[in-house]
Image (cartoon, rainbow, N blue to C red; front, top):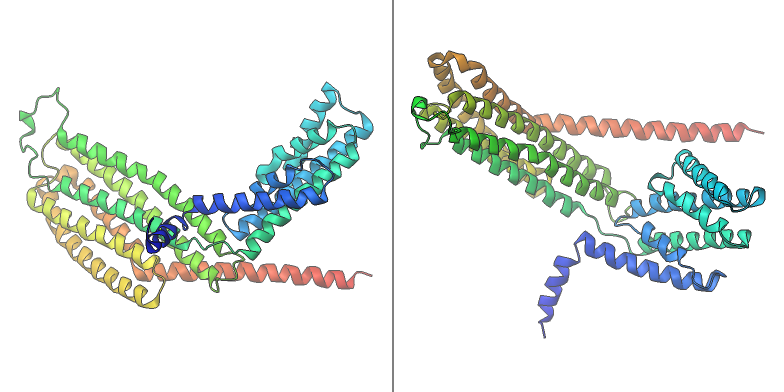
Length: 415
Protein backbone atom coordinates (compact mmCIF):
# COMPACT_ATOMS: atom_id res chain seq x y z
CA UNK A 1 0.00 0.00 0.00
CA UNK A 2 1.53 3.34 -1.06
CA UNK A 3 2.50 5.79 1.63
CA UNK A 4 -0.05 8.65 2.14
CA UNK A 5 2.63 11.22 1.33
CA UNK A 6 3.28 9.51 -2.03
CA UNK A 7 -0.43 9.52 -2.80
CA UNK A 8 -0.55 13.24 -2.00
CA UNK A 9 2.43 13.95 -4.25
CA UNK A 10 0.74 11.93 -7.01
CA UNK A 11 -2.44 14.00 -6.68
CA UNK A 12 -0.47 17.24 -6.64
CA UNK A 13 1.07 16.28 -9.98
CA UNK A 14 -2.02 14.92 -11.72
CA UNK A 15 -4.54 17.21 -9.99
CA UNK A 16 -3.02 20.20 -11.79
CA UNK A 17 -3.23 18.61 -15.23
CA UNK A 18 -5.96 20.30 -17.33
CA UNK A 19 -7.02 16.99 -18.91
CA UNK A 20 -7.49 15.28 -15.54
CA UNK A 21 -9.37 18.24 -14.04
CA UNK A 22 -11.57 18.59 -17.12
CA UNK A 23 -12.43 14.87 -17.10
CA UNK A 24 -13.42 14.78 -13.43
CA UNK A 25 -15.41 18.02 -13.53
CA UNK A 26 -17.29 17.11 -16.71
CA UNK A 27 -18.19 13.65 -15.40
CA UNK A 28 -19.50 15.02 -12.12
CA UNK A 29 -21.49 17.85 -13.74
CA UNK A 30 -23.05 15.56 -16.37
CA UNK A 31 -24.13 13.03 -13.75
CA UNK A 32 -25.66 15.69 -11.49
CA UNK A 33 -27.52 17.31 -14.39
CA UNK A 34 -28.99 13.94 -15.44
CA UNK A 35 -30.25 13.25 -11.92
CA UNK A 36 -31.88 16.69 -11.76
CA UNK A 37 -33.43 16.31 -15.24
CA UNK A 38 -34.97 12.94 -14.27
CA UNK A 39 -37.00 14.73 -11.63
CA UNK A 40 -38.01 17.81 -13.63
CA UNK A 41 -38.42 16.59 -17.21
CA UNK A 42 -41.19 14.37 -18.57
CA UNK A 43 -38.76 12.55 -20.86
CA UNK A 44 -37.90 9.00 -19.70
CA UNK A 45 -34.22 9.48 -20.60
CA UNK A 46 -33.36 13.22 -20.55
CA UNK A 47 -29.90 12.86 -22.08
CA UNK A 48 -29.88 16.43 -23.37
CA UNK A 49 -29.12 17.69 -19.86
CA UNK A 50 -25.87 15.72 -19.36
CA UNK A 51 -24.91 16.40 -22.98
CA UNK A 52 -25.27 20.13 -22.34
CA UNK A 53 -23.29 19.86 -19.11
CA UNK A 54 -20.47 18.09 -20.95
CA UNK A 55 -20.35 20.89 -23.52
CA UNK A 56 -20.77 23.68 -20.99
CA UNK A 57 -18.37 22.70 -18.20
CA UNK A 58 -15.01 24.00 -19.35
CA UNK A 59 -11.77 24.36 -17.41
CA UNK A 60 -12.42 28.01 -16.52
CA UNK A 61 -15.41 29.87 -15.12
CA UNK A 62 -15.32 32.44 -17.93
CA UNK A 63 -15.43 29.72 -20.62
CA UNK A 64 -18.27 28.00 -18.78
CA UNK A 65 -20.36 31.17 -18.70
CA UNK A 66 -19.83 32.06 -22.35
CA UNK A 67 -20.34 28.47 -23.51
CA UNK A 68 -23.56 28.19 -21.49
CA UNK A 69 -25.04 31.27 -23.14
CA UNK A 70 -24.16 30.11 -26.66
CA UNK A 71 -25.42 26.58 -26.01
CA UNK A 72 -28.79 27.68 -24.60
CA UNK A 73 -29.18 30.24 -27.36
CA UNK A 74 -28.59 27.63 -30.07
CA UNK A 75 -31.09 25.17 -28.60
CA UNK A 76 -33.83 27.78 -28.12
CA UNK A 77 -33.40 29.06 -31.67
CA UNK A 78 -33.54 25.51 -33.05
CA UNK A 79 -36.69 24.73 -31.06
CA UNK A 80 -38.45 27.89 -32.25
CA UNK A 81 -37.59 27.07 -35.87
CA UNK A 82 -38.94 23.52 -35.43
CA UNK A 83 -42.21 24.78 -33.91
CA UNK A 84 -42.69 27.18 -36.79
CA UNK A 85 -42.08 24.50 -39.41
CA UNK A 86 -44.32 21.97 -37.65
CA UNK A 87 -47.22 24.43 -37.79
CA UNK A 88 -46.67 25.24 -41.47
CA UNK A 89 -45.51 22.09 -43.28
CA UNK A 90 -44.73 19.14 -41.00
CA UNK A 91 -41.95 16.64 -41.74
CA UNK A 92 -41.12 15.73 -45.36
CA UNK A 93 -37.84 15.34 -47.19
CA UNK A 94 -38.00 18.87 -48.59
CA UNK A 95 -39.12 20.40 -45.28
CA UNK A 96 -36.20 18.64 -43.59
CA UNK A 97 -33.84 20.21 -46.12
CA UNK A 98 -35.42 23.62 -45.55
CA UNK A 99 -35.21 23.37 -41.78
CA UNK A 100 -31.53 22.40 -41.92
CA UNK A 101 -30.79 25.26 -44.29
CA UNK A 102 -32.77 27.76 -42.22
CA UNK A 103 -31.21 26.58 -38.95
CA UNK A 104 -27.64 26.87 -40.24
CA UNK A 105 -28.29 30.32 -41.71
CA UNK A 106 -30.06 31.64 -38.61
CA UNK A 107 -27.36 30.13 -36.39
CA UNK A 108 -24.77 32.34 -38.08
CA UNK A 109 -26.83 35.45 -37.43
CA UNK A 110 -27.53 34.77 -33.74
CA UNK A 111 -23.78 34.32 -33.08
CA UNK A 112 -23.77 30.98 -31.30
CA UNK A 113 -20.18 30.29 -32.34
CA UNK A 114 -19.25 26.63 -32.53
CA UNK A 115 -22.85 25.62 -31.70
CA UNK A 116 -24.24 26.47 -35.15
CA UNK A 117 -24.83 22.76 -35.93
CA UNK A 118 -26.68 22.48 -32.61
CA UNK A 119 -29.40 24.78 -33.98
CA UNK A 120 -30.10 22.34 -36.82
CA UNK A 121 -29.81 19.30 -34.55
CA UNK A 122 -32.33 20.71 -32.07
CA UNK A 123 -34.74 21.59 -34.87
CA UNK A 124 -34.52 18.12 -36.45
CA UNK A 125 -34.96 16.26 -33.17
CA UNK A 126 -38.01 18.31 -32.22
CA UNK A 127 -39.57 18.16 -35.70
CA UNK A 128 -39.27 14.38 -35.82
CA UNK A 129 -41.64 13.70 -32.91
CA UNK A 130 -45.41 13.65 -32.79
CA UNK A 131 -46.01 16.02 -29.90
CA UNK A 132 -43.82 18.86 -31.08
CA UNK A 133 -44.64 21.42 -28.42
CA UNK A 134 -44.16 19.14 -25.41
CA UNK A 135 -40.92 17.69 -26.74
CA UNK A 136 -39.65 21.12 -27.71
CA UNK A 137 -40.04 22.63 -24.28
CA UNK A 138 -38.70 19.48 -22.61
CA UNK A 139 -35.57 19.87 -24.72
CA UNK A 140 -35.27 23.53 -23.72
CA UNK A 141 -35.77 22.56 -20.05
CA UNK A 142 -33.11 19.86 -20.23
CA UNK A 143 -30.70 22.26 -21.91
CA UNK A 144 -31.30 24.86 -19.21
CA UNK A 145 -30.78 22.23 -16.50
CA UNK A 146 -27.46 21.14 -18.00
CA UNK A 147 -26.30 24.72 -18.47
CA UNK A 148 -27.33 25.82 -14.96
CA UNK A 149 -25.79 22.78 -13.29
CA UNK A 150 -22.56 23.27 -15.22
CA UNK A 151 -22.44 26.94 -14.33
CA UNK A 152 -23.23 26.38 -10.65
CA UNK A 153 -20.69 23.59 -10.58
CA UNK A 154 -17.95 26.04 -11.50
CA UNK A 155 -19.32 28.80 -9.26
CA UNK A 156 -19.39 26.59 -6.17
CA UNK A 157 -16.17 24.73 -7.02
CA UNK A 158 -14.09 27.53 -8.48
CA UNK A 159 -11.79 26.21 -11.22
CA UNK A 160 -8.05 26.46 -10.68
CA UNK A 161 -5.99 29.29 -12.09
CA UNK A 162 -3.81 28.04 -14.93
CA UNK A 163 -1.17 30.76 -14.70
CA UNK A 164 1.52 28.29 -13.61
CA UNK A 165 0.81 26.05 -16.59
CA UNK A 166 1.07 28.98 -19.00
CA UNK A 167 4.22 30.17 -17.24
CA UNK A 168 5.83 26.75 -17.61
CA UNK A 169 4.96 26.80 -21.32
CA UNK A 170 6.59 30.22 -21.73
CA UNK A 171 9.75 29.07 -19.96
CA UNK A 172 9.88 25.89 -22.08
CA UNK A 173 9.57 27.99 -25.23
CA UNK A 174 12.46 30.21 -24.11
CA UNK A 175 14.58 27.14 -23.40
CA UNK A 176 13.90 25.71 -26.86
CA UNK A 177 14.94 29.03 -28.36
CA UNK A 178 18.04 28.95 -26.17
CA UNK A 179 19.02 25.51 -27.50
CA UNK A 180 18.59 26.75 -31.06
CA UNK A 181 20.82 29.75 -30.41
CA UNK A 182 23.48 27.52 -28.84
CA UNK A 183 23.40 25.25 -31.89
CA UNK A 184 23.70 28.23 -34.22
CA UNK A 185 26.69 29.43 -32.23
CA UNK A 186 28.36 26.06 -32.57
CA UNK A 187 27.85 26.22 -36.33
CA UNK A 188 29.62 29.58 -36.47
CA UNK A 189 32.57 28.34 -34.40
CA UNK A 190 32.79 24.86 -35.97
CA UNK A 191 36.49 24.00 -35.99
CA UNK A 192 35.98 20.91 -38.17
CA UNK A 193 34.72 22.66 -41.32
CA UNK A 194 37.15 22.27 -44.22
CA UNK A 195 38.89 25.54 -45.10
CA UNK A 196 39.44 24.79 -48.75
CA UNK A 197 36.15 24.76 -50.71
CA UNK A 198 37.97 23.60 -53.86
CA UNK A 199 38.84 20.28 -52.18
CA UNK A 200 35.15 19.36 -51.73
CA UNK A 201 33.63 17.42 -54.67
CA UNK A 202 30.77 19.21 -56.35
CA UNK A 203 28.51 16.16 -56.13
CA UNK A 204 28.67 16.12 -52.31
CA UNK A 205 26.52 18.76 -50.58
CA UNK A 206 28.54 20.86 -48.12
CA UNK A 207 28.08 19.59 -44.54
CA UNK A 208 27.93 23.15 -43.19
CA UNK A 209 25.02 23.97 -45.47
CA UNK A 210 23.14 20.83 -44.43
CA UNK A 211 23.55 21.66 -40.77
CA UNK A 212 22.51 25.27 -41.33
CA UNK A 213 19.42 24.11 -43.25
CA UNK A 214 18.54 21.81 -40.35
CA UNK A 215 18.78 24.74 -37.92
CA UNK A 216 16.54 26.77 -40.21
CA UNK A 217 13.96 23.98 -40.09
CA UNK A 218 14.12 24.01 -36.29
CA UNK A 219 13.63 27.77 -36.27
CA UNK A 220 10.55 27.43 -38.46
CA UNK A 221 9.12 24.86 -36.07
CA UNK A 222 9.13 27.53 -33.36
CA UNK A 223 5.93 28.86 -34.94
CA UNK A 224 4.12 25.69 -33.81
CA UNK A 225 5.63 26.02 -30.34
CA UNK A 226 4.43 29.62 -30.12
CA UNK A 227 0.92 28.52 -31.13
CA UNK A 228 0.89 25.88 -28.37
CA UNK A 229 2.01 28.42 -25.77
CA UNK A 230 -0.62 30.85 -27.03
CA UNK A 231 -3.34 28.23 -26.45
CA UNK A 232 -2.08 27.63 -22.89
CA UNK A 233 -1.98 31.37 -22.31
CA UNK A 234 -5.55 31.86 -23.55
CA UNK A 235 -6.66 29.21 -21.06
CA UNK A 236 -4.79 31.03 -18.30
CA UNK A 237 -6.37 34.34 -19.30
CA UNK A 238 -9.84 32.80 -19.19
CA UNK A 239 -9.12 31.31 -15.76
CA UNK A 240 -8.31 34.79 -14.44
CA UNK A 241 -11.53 36.37 -15.70
CA UNK A 242 -14.46 36.39 -13.26
CA UNK A 243 -12.37 34.40 -10.76
CA UNK A 244 -13.00 35.56 -7.16
CA UNK A 245 -9.63 34.19 -6.06
CA UNK A 246 -7.71 36.58 -8.29
CA UNK A 247 -7.40 40.25 -7.33
CA UNK A 248 -5.12 41.49 -10.12
CA UNK A 249 -6.24 39.37 -13.03
CA UNK A 250 -5.79 42.10 -15.63
CA UNK A 251 -2.18 42.71 -14.63
CA UNK A 252 -1.37 38.99 -14.74
CA UNK A 253 -2.93 38.66 -18.18
CA UNK A 254 -1.04 41.64 -19.58
CA UNK A 255 2.31 40.53 -18.12
CA UNK A 256 2.03 37.05 -19.61
CA UNK A 257 0.60 38.22 -22.94
CA UNK A 258 3.24 40.89 -23.52
CA UNK A 259 5.93 38.40 -22.52
CA UNK A 260 4.71 35.90 -25.09
CA UNK A 261 4.47 38.65 -27.72
CA UNK A 262 8.12 39.51 -27.09
CA UNK A 263 9.20 35.88 -27.39
CA UNK A 264 7.17 35.52 -30.57
CA UNK A 265 9.01 38.49 -32.10
CA UNK A 266 12.30 36.95 -31.01
CA UNK A 267 11.30 33.65 -32.62
CA UNK A 268 10.68 35.45 -35.90
CA UNK A 269 14.08 37.15 -35.65
CA UNK A 270 15.72 33.80 -34.89
CA UNK A 271 14.18 32.38 -38.04
CA UNK A 272 15.64 35.28 -40.02
CA UNK A 273 19.00 34.74 -38.29
CA UNK A 274 18.96 31.05 -39.24
CA UNK A 275 18.05 32.05 -42.79
CA UNK A 276 21.03 34.44 -42.94
CA UNK A 277 23.38 31.72 -41.70
CA UNK A 278 21.97 29.28 -44.24
CA UNK A 279 22.59 31.77 -47.03
CA UNK A 280 26.11 32.35 -45.73
CA UNK A 281 26.79 28.60 -45.58
CA UNK A 282 25.51 28.21 -49.13
CA UNK A 283 27.85 30.90 -50.40
CA UNK A 284 30.84 29.55 -48.48
CA UNK A 285 30.36 26.10 -50.09
CA UNK A 286 31.66 24.05 -47.16
CA UNK A 287 34.30 26.42 -45.87
CA UNK A 288 33.99 27.97 -42.39
CA UNK A 289 31.20 30.52 -42.24
CA UNK A 290 33.59 33.08 -40.78
CA UNK A 291 37.18 33.00 -39.61
CA UNK A 292 37.73 31.20 -36.35
CA UNK A 293 38.23 34.26 -34.14
CA UNK A 294 35.06 35.94 -35.41
CA UNK A 295 33.17 32.65 -35.14
CA UNK A 296 34.16 32.23 -31.49
CA UNK A 297 33.08 35.80 -30.78
CA UNK A 298 29.69 35.21 -32.41
CA UNK A 299 29.26 31.96 -30.50
CA UNK A 300 29.93 33.82 -27.25
CA UNK A 301 27.40 36.48 -28.26
CA UNK A 302 24.70 33.93 -29.07
CA UNK A 303 25.41 32.08 -25.82
CA UNK A 304 24.80 35.23 -23.78
CA UNK A 305 21.77 36.02 -25.93
CA UNK A 306 20.40 32.53 -25.22
CA UNK A 307 20.82 33.05 -21.45
CA UNK A 308 19.05 36.41 -21.79
CA UNK A 309 15.99 34.72 -23.30
CA UNK A 310 15.66 32.35 -20.34
CA UNK A 311 16.18 35.19 -17.85
CA UNK A 312 13.46 37.17 -19.59
CA UNK A 313 11.05 34.22 -19.38
CA UNK A 314 11.83 33.82 -15.66
CA UNK A 315 11.08 37.52 -15.13
CA UNK A 316 7.76 37.29 -16.98
CA UNK A 317 6.59 34.24 -15.02
CA UNK A 318 7.76 35.36 -11.57
CA UNK A 319 4.94 35.41 -8.99
CA UNK A 320 6.66 37.26 -6.16
CA UNK A 321 8.33 40.65 -5.96
CA UNK A 322 11.56 39.13 -4.67
CA UNK A 323 11.63 36.62 -7.51
CA UNK A 324 10.92 39.34 -10.06
CA UNK A 325 13.75 41.53 -8.69
CA UNK A 326 16.19 38.62 -8.81
CA UNK A 327 15.14 37.73 -12.35
CA UNK A 328 15.40 41.37 -13.45
CA UNK A 329 18.91 41.67 -12.02
CA UNK A 330 19.96 38.48 -13.79
CA UNK A 331 18.38 39.74 -17.02
CA UNK A 332 20.33 43.00 -16.74
CA UNK A 333 23.60 41.09 -16.25
CA UNK A 334 22.90 38.80 -19.22
CA UNK A 335 21.98 41.77 -21.41
CA UNK A 336 25.18 43.59 -20.47
CA UNK A 337 27.29 40.52 -21.24
CA UNK A 338 25.47 39.97 -24.53
CA UNK A 339 25.96 43.57 -25.63
CA UNK A 340 29.66 43.49 -24.75
CA UNK A 341 30.11 40.26 -26.69
CA UNK A 342 28.13 41.71 -29.57
CA UNK A 343 30.41 44.78 -29.75
CA UNK A 344 33.49 42.56 -29.77
CA UNK A 345 32.01 40.39 -32.54
CA UNK A 346 31.06 43.51 -34.52
CA UNK A 347 34.68 44.66 -34.58
CA UNK A 348 35.84 41.29 -35.82
CA UNK A 349 33.09 41.11 -38.44
CA UNK A 350 34.11 44.57 -39.66
CA UNK A 351 37.59 43.23 -40.29
CA UNK A 352 36.03 40.14 -41.85
CA UNK A 353 34.02 42.34 -44.22
CA UNK A 354 37.16 44.22 -45.20
CA UNK A 355 38.80 40.89 -46.02
CA UNK A 356 35.67 39.53 -47.76
CA UNK A 357 33.67 42.58 -48.94
CA UNK A 358 31.17 40.54 -50.99
CA UNK A 359 29.54 39.28 -47.81
CA UNK A 360 29.36 42.47 -45.75
CA UNK A 361 25.57 42.54 -46.12
CA UNK A 362 25.22 39.11 -44.50
CA UNK A 363 27.54 40.10 -41.67
CA UNK A 364 25.56 43.28 -41.12
CA UNK A 365 22.30 41.29 -41.16
CA UNK A 366 23.62 39.00 -38.41
CA UNK A 367 24.43 41.96 -36.19
CA UNK A 368 21.11 43.68 -36.94
CA UNK A 369 19.16 40.55 -35.98
CA UNK A 370 21.11 40.20 -32.73
CA UNK A 371 20.44 43.88 -31.96
CA UNK A 372 16.71 43.39 -32.57
CA UNK A 373 16.52 40.57 -30.03
CA UNK A 374 18.50 42.58 -27.48
CA UNK A 375 16.18 45.56 -27.93
CA UNK A 376 13.07 43.39 -27.49
CA UNK A 377 14.40 41.88 -24.27
CA UNK A 378 15.45 45.20 -22.78
CA UNK A 379 13.54 45.95 -19.52
CA UNK A 380 12.94 49.55 -20.60
CA UNK A 381 11.29 48.43 -23.82
CA UNK A 382 9.20 45.92 -21.89
CA UNK A 383 8.12 48.58 -19.39
CA UNK A 384 6.88 50.85 -22.16
CA UNK A 385 4.93 47.99 -23.72
CA UNK A 386 3.30 47.12 -20.40
CA UNK A 387 2.25 50.74 -19.86
CA UNK A 388 0.81 50.93 -23.38
CA UNK A 389 -1.24 47.77 -22.82
CA UNK A 390 -2.48 48.96 -19.43
CA UNK A 391 -3.48 52.31 -20.94
CA UNK A 392 -5.29 50.56 -23.78
CA UNK A 393 -7.27 48.34 -21.40
CA UNK A 394 -8.06 51.34 -19.21
CA UNK A 395 -9.44 53.25 -22.20
CA UNK A 396 -11.51 50.22 -23.24
CA UNK A 397 -13.01 49.92 -19.76
CA UNK A 398 -13.78 53.63 -19.68
CA UNK A 399 -15.47 53.36 -23.07
CA UNK A 400 -17.60 50.41 -21.91
CA UNK A 401 -18.63 52.30 -18.77
CA UNK A 402 -19.50 55.33 -20.87
CA UNK A 403 -21.72 53.23 -23.12
CA UNK A 404 -23.50 51.60 -20.18
CA UNK A 405 -24.04 55.00 -18.54
CA UNK A 406 -25.38 56.40 -21.82
CA UNK A 407 -27.81 53.50 -22.26
CA UNK A 408 -29.00 53.84 -18.66
CA UNK A 409 -29.56 57.57 -19.13
CA UNK A 410 -31.58 56.94 -22.30
CA UNK A 411 -33.67 54.34 -20.49
CA UNK A 412 -34.46 56.79 -17.72
CA UNK A 413 -35.52 59.47 -20.20
CA UNK A 414 -37.81 57.08 -22.08
CA UNK A 415 -41.42 57.66 -20.90
